Amino acid sequence: MPEPMTRQRLRRELELENLLQAEPVAPGSWARFVEPRGVGLNHIFILRCRGRDWVGRKTLQRDEHARLRLDSRLAPWMLLGPLGQLHWGDEGLVLDYRATRQADKVAAFADALGAPDSEIYFPFPALRRNGREFVCPPDYWAFTEGLASKLDKGEAHLRHHCCTLLRSWLKPGAVIHDPACSTGTFIHQLALALPDSRCIGSDRSPSMIEAARNRYGRSVDFRRADAADADPVSLYYDVLVLRFLNAEVMTRSEAEQLLPRLVETLVVGGRLIVFGHTPVLPAMDYLASRCALTLVSRLASCSVTGQLFQFYVLTKDSR
View 1 (tube, one colour):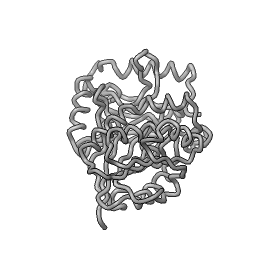
View 2: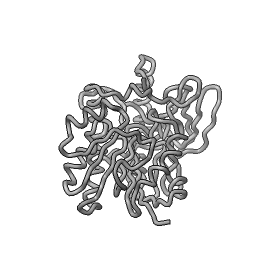
View 3: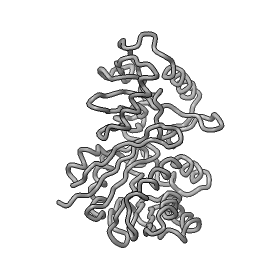
């Protein structure tokens, strides 16, 4: 199961919350942060903006009931500062950075949102003790009410942003495919927001597809299919919503091998949208250059909290 919450981990997350939100004693001076081996490496992130790399450490966040939970959004205070160097040693990952005021972290986030080439990426996937990438077993994705509630709640900001974007782009009759639709809630919300579009959801989990049909079968055409097959369910698509090329869902190599095959199911001029609960795995600039894709944007901001999250939008070019 992904990242069990132990007392030791909870204690560290609380300590990090206090550390990251504190004002530095000597702004601009060199500081050092060490991320030990194990759970935590996959929460190190880089914010690249205008040729400068900022390093940060995502932490658990508090919900409306002050309970700690994982979230795909990043707050400015999670930044450490501009990255100097990083090293690996017996103690873990050592990050040297410039200590930064909270106000400057907020300004860095605002600047990143306004710069079209800005990007957030996570260098390390979730890892097992043996150093191999961690992937949830297939039975983890079997439908339960608890899992559905957790997944649906965690992607509310993603649904809202996606609906807003697609309303401004799509023409009537557009075909949207979510090839790993899970609970069906995401593609259902798109169907409600875009009533003149045809929405198709597919998933390899029989229980997820059954639940999705029972809940939203009137608004979405649900099919059982494995996205790894990368074959069109019924036709080619104007929009592909990819929210499964992510850490804990598959390995980085699997994600980078699958993306080009999925692009083949997209019409020329179609849009590819890539995001997820956990970090996006493919190196999008690299793959875009090899798949005749144009990167339109790489990140987005939550309309409620102002926090940033990974959200790649690409268009398919004619070769």
